[in-house]
Length: 228
Image 1 (cartoon, rainbow, N blue to C red):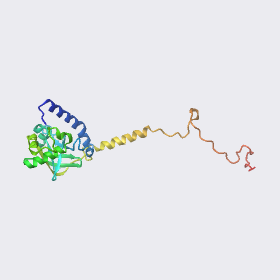
Image 2 (tube, helix red, strand yellow):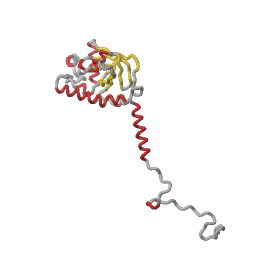
Image 3 (cartoon, rainbow, N blue to C red):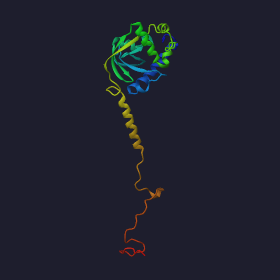
Image 4 (cartoon, rainbow, N blue to C red):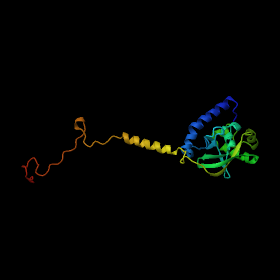
């Protein structure tokens, strides 16, 4: 995706805003499995270390899983911040929709492996897979090679488990906190039941208690009422 044109710069800013403001928070909340679909594409989040700051950085990218390896494509070329970060520190973590994975990042040099991975990543990218100006499902291999020349293809080789949304540092606990707060608010706003309604304010009074034996209106005090 060219970045040296006004359209390219605008697209890059738009993707950066959407990724930081929407995709990354949803993944950190544990909602990644709900986001992937053929229209908007299937997305994972790279968890890299900033090459200058040393701070954790998150970058959503389209991906493909082939033969037990995870692949992604640097659509903005070698200027992509996440690509430069993993070149400086190749041992990173992935937040996949199926769970977190620790991986080692490697550039793909083999032409056949690169071609296969690139096509699958772009097919999994939804509408973003068409932004280079061709159909990744029907384009000949020669066209795909030409259009993606110079774009790094990265192999992410799993080496262990990563830390997910429910682990320390994740945001899944926020959903529980929000749900608990909502339930508490609902309970606090629920009116208490009136045990003795106020008849002077239009409330309904309780029915009078039945008379005790000896309190009938036609019987003398201290005598039971007769049946006739």
